[in-house]
Amino acid sequence: MTLTSLILIFISSLLSQDHIDVLINDVLSGSRDSAAIYLEVIEKKYPNNPKMLFLKGLMEPNGKDAMHIFADLYNMHPTSNYGDDAVMKVAEYYYSAGLYMQSAAWLKKMPLYYTRSEHIERAVKLFLNSLVVSGHRDTAVFYSKVFKRQFPSMDVDGKINTLLKESVHTNNSSAEFVSPKTSNKVGRVPSSPTSIILETKEYSGMYSLQSGAFGLEKNAVDQRINLLAAGYDARITELYRQDRVLFAVRIGYYLNKRDAQAIRHKIKSKMDLSTIIVINE
Image (cartoon, rainbow, N blue to C red; front, side, top):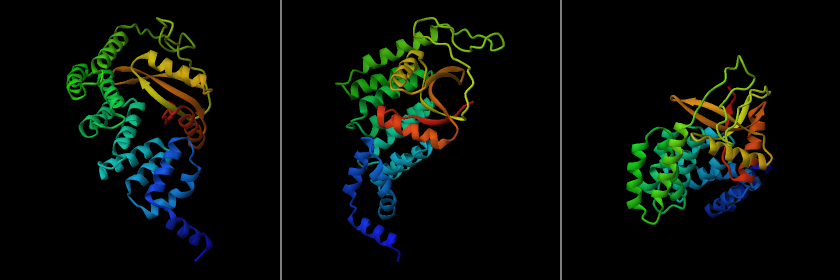
């Protein structure tokens, strides 16, 4: 038996499930070094353990792969202490990707199964917003009435009214586009101080990070400003999904996924903002 094997056996004998909680808290606080050292041993000692799966999902650099790990956690251990966290991670992945109905399907699990979760208020807001921005306004209003009865201390009326007003503003605003043949700028013609024109400047790099895809342009502008203030090269790109325009916030241009993943971890640690790696079209 090699020295490395003996060391791993010794470390394994010292690790308990309580240690996994400590490592999870470290990762959530921005410190990943200890988890990187112990994860392989923990995975062997506690296969399919919900705490191990949550830690593994947090450490996975690829957003889509991490989402599948969190989905497996929920499917295998829905009543674990990390069941609600896993649901939110999957929902946030779909929401960041602009896949609002998939996000809503996961967010709906929160008021059904995790009414006492610390994430419940945010889950309700994201669920209602996912329905509104995907065109299911009547469904959103219906569920807002359900949530109002279910969570009497939550300001559900305020949330749904704000979302509906933002939706009306977005749908009624003008959206003229300049042909790329007649201009070196392509994008939304500014109708207010918060509107922007999207640049077509050429950059090298196949990959970018996407932190959100919004139906309301102002939300994308606000997030971009926060990223710029934190020192990241953020831009807004228009996406077309099911005859709708979404405003995606994207960061940087990277030659490979490894470089993108490094910045992704920094943004998560510095701003507690989740991003996914996307291929530039």
